[in-house]
Structure formats: structure tokens, C-alpha cells
Image (tube, rainbow, N blue to C red; front, top):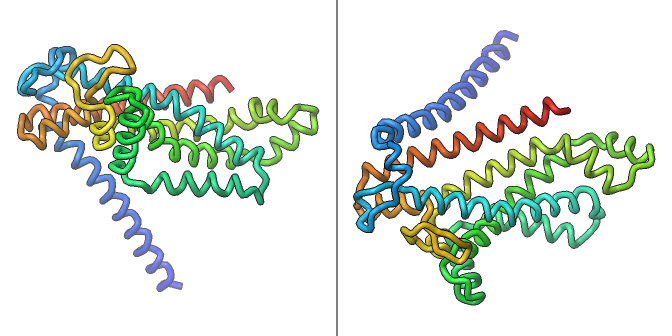
Length: 277
């Protein structure tokens, strides 16, 4: 008995150590970037456009490009991803070959490197469809990239809703769609929003696919047909071309702050939904 207790304590301690190591790595990365990047953050850096050389000015156009691309990609991917999840879990038969193909496609897309998505987007959207380096080309590529994440997380969220909810709703005379819309989706919404947040994080941090499809223009985008530079692309160019490591760290710090703000706002929305229920 004592040997079993000692073994359990050792295993528990190892798991705690692993968890602390993960937290420590995250805190260390964020702290290092914050120490190097926070001193460079200012209102001028956020509101001014970058200079052609990149060593002066701010990143206002990169911020705008990031928000435009992410917003358009979500508008395209969220309805399709959630709709696919609803079909797979609520309408498709267990032995459906089409549903099996959709699941296999989502799993395969989730494992494809981003540079492959970028090459596909460049060949298909930029060249074949003639959209050029533009926000719409980059957003379409990003939508394809984040679609598997949204679909899989929405599926898991829908599966977590007890089957009894559906049976009780149907027994009371509600239709299939009415049951899904009023009984299944509301409890699954927190999980769906979690998937959307994960997708936002990937979209904001994407670099390779954006360079190949949206370009790296320093100009402020005003339409979907304009090229754009995102914050991650700006960070990559600043660091890899040796333009300014200080501005690269400042840009990285702003990306982390932006992701934290998005997560905080999503958490507030989830709490609002919970309070409304």
C-alpha cells in the first residue's frame, strides 16, 4: 500500500512538473518579448504608417491589414465550418460515405503545412482566378486554413450536448431545425466560440501563406482587391531582412497584446451568454 502511494505521489509530481514547465516556457517567451518590445510601444507607433525603409514610422497599415484579412476570413469560414459540423452531427447518417469523406478532408487539411496553403492560394486565387495579391486572395486562403479547426471544434461542442435534449424537444413537437437552433446550438456555443478564437490566433500569426497571396504592401488597404501587409509579415520582414530588431520585438509584443484582447473580449461574450441563459 505504501509503495502504491509513493508511486502515485511521484507520478503526480511529474505531471505537476510538466505543467509548470509548459507554463514556465510560455511565461518566459512572453516576458522576453515584453522586455524587448514594450519600451517601443507608443501612440505614434500604432497610428503612423511605416516608412518605405521600415526603420521609421509605425505599423498602422499592418494592423489594418491584419484586421481586414482576419475579419474577411472569419466571415467566409465560420458559417461554412459550423454548417458542416451541424450537418455531420445532426443530419448525416452514421454510415454515410459523404460524411466520412468530409471528416477525412477536415483532418487532412488540419495537417497540411501553411506554406502549401500559400502555394495553393498563389496558384489558384492569385493567378488562375486573376484576383492578384489582395485581401480577398489572402482571406480565401486563410479561410481554407482555419476551416478544419472551426469544423472539428464545432463538432465536439455539438457532440457534448446531451442526446436527451434533442429527444425531449422532438417529443414536444419541435422540428429538426428548430431543435438544432434553439436546443443544440445555445449550449454548444461556448465550444464553437473557442474554436473561432483558436482560428483567430492562427490567422493573426500566419506569415508564409499571406506573403504569397496578400502580398506585403505598405499602403493602407481600402478595398478587398488591394494588397496588404499583416503584422506577422511585417515582423518577419523586419527581423529576417535585418531592418530593425527593436521594431520587430515591438511588433511581436503588439501581436501578443492583440491576441490577449481578443481572448478577453471572447471571454466576456461567453460570460454574457451564460448570464443571458
